[in-house]
Image 1 (cartoon, one colour):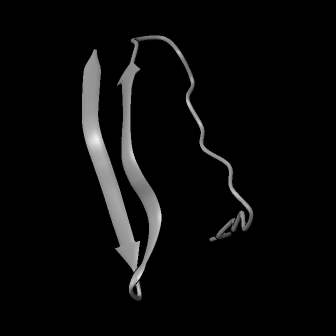
Image 2 (cartoon, rainbow, N blue to C red):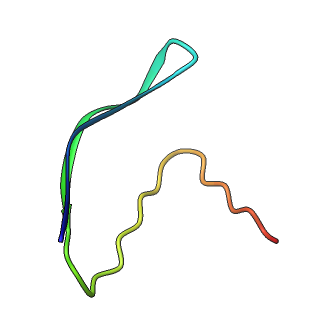
Length: 42
């Protein structure tokens, strides 16, 4: 189990994520989607 508490990300003087907390459980797939989802291919 992994726990993230009060995660904040600032991008060019704008808060992209502010004070987010979550717990990652073993065996679960967790993903985060927003307005711009980018996929990088090899």
